[in-house]
Image (cartoon, rainbow, N blue to C red):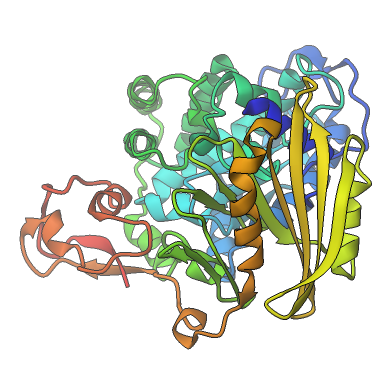
Length: 501
């Protein structure tokens, strides 16, 4: 299946996120801001800044900025406070490091994720913000991400990669999702395969960033040991097959080991007399109150094998037994065996259904076998069948649809192996031809769930505070993880907890 996905990545024009940096990778002997020593990097510092600037626009286009200016301003304030203690802002740092501005963003994704791009771009998803319990945890993770930038880990790692193959560097987990394929936990692209798609950091780099995260947050006055509790959150999230932080990939140190290491390193800073007692729980909880929790149905959801998109006002049927991956830029449905895939996105570079199909047919390695104009539920549409090959030369079959609807042109790309084509062709056609306007007012008006911070009115196990109705795709254990408690943890009267509303 990996070869099919790679074929899609290189041959089909799906409007997906692939970064093409306008810089040339070469060995550059420069200063490591953390050690102060000269060493080899793939890029100069200015090139790293340019890479980050270019990638920032793509990240925004893919994720979207979470629409909460107050929360974004809060993240920036914490980021600047921690950054001020980093090696990049110390008096002996090179001027180019001290004067490089940083950008901190909250992006609109439920995935538990934080990542940094070279040159000073740091991102936290609303998902990770919802899972943290205080400002000290935020500061420690922030210090970790700033540490990646300060130690120039991405540029170090790039030396071992093939020139021109850098997609999203700096630890961004979105590599798998952004390449037009479902996330690794669905397509099992963890480990070796994922390494081929995006740059990940080495275990030594992750340990160094853990150390820097503790150092920077401790010097900023935070109780850095609180960061260890967040490792337990990650273990629980990972165990349930959910999203994960880039620094907790399978190739990295075990979260349990890192939990103990963070506590030990924090104690070492305390032993030095560092004032590091601020936790900021009340302040943090007040800032995340009202944040969207879980999947936002406004961006699309599935109910009874039907996919609905309230904002764009369309719907289509999902074949029974197929899975669905909903991203901001596209919707991917695929078989349980992962040998049949259909991708729907907006073809923003065309003005007609036929042009949407033609753009794909113009790709190298795609050979059209037949085409036809048609109507799909009264909408102008165009269909084409095509042959292709994967990177090993194995034959693929592709079915393309363009559909004009509500001032936009939608493109559907369906593909499978030649051997499975006749099996999946009916599903490809049926799903495409089920595309239709969404008119059900109940579906159109659906709203996301948001976090409400409440004070417990009694002493009771956490499970007793769980509401009967939870957000789409969330269960009681998920809510316990968000609160960093177990279902049987005794909650004390007056204790503040996160409850969806």
